[in-house]
Image (cartoon, rainbow, N blue to C red; front, side, top):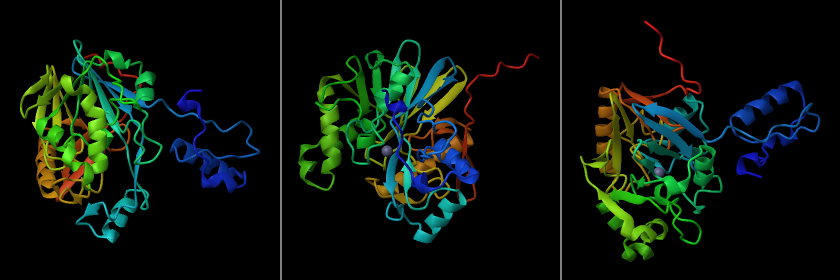
Length: 342
Ligand SMILES: [Zn+2]
């Protein structure tokens, strides 16, 4: 049985009787992935499947596929977003019809087929369960999208946090992308694989970075600000979230697309109020400066982008709104519409 066929967790709706109204509620909960209602008297069994976790679209002559590593629950948000009061956070979330007691971040991994190369951008949590059991789906999502790990030529990282580097080795430390070269900023590699940090506050992060990156030690190349990583993909330094946090600008023909990694973690809280500081930033003040710079570029140049932690699949645009920015999610195109004839 593949993972997608497994029953999802049962929700609190279990106890609701099978009235017409609760049937409707159950349908809504399922489509939102909130849980599987268990109605004894349903006319057909409630479905236990949802959509495959990949989404494909073109960038010029390249083909992009977003594959998910699964959602990551951060929990109650007031400690994580600094500079906003608890009331402001609650109001922002409820005004946007989002849960106020548990922030859920997606993990939108990008696979880019440039023709000559197959490139993976960030890799999810892997076997680490520090943020619960809903993560670690990357290999399943790649399989659903028909992408074999052995065909990946390059793995490009925005930074070495556990939810970005976690998916390159298996449980015994074996390389899952046997033919890939890894690319990351040297400052981030050095910081997060530093043995002397194994005893400090950052030890869980350092342990996972070492576990994932060291098996590829001889196959790591360091990215540099403003330089091409592979043809069509240019690195752009955006430090603060980590010392070497880097985003990537993809260009093919007239199309541009940006993989912005963790420039922002939330489509409302860190986007509409971009000066908010985030608890996991190594240098929160520098992260704010990088966020404002990248956001200005995205809005001014109307660049399409994917944010690693935005709601699935995380693709869209930003526009200025007051002191901050607003995210406009791209409509998902399942069947491409042919261009209209003149
Ligand atoms: Zn992250």
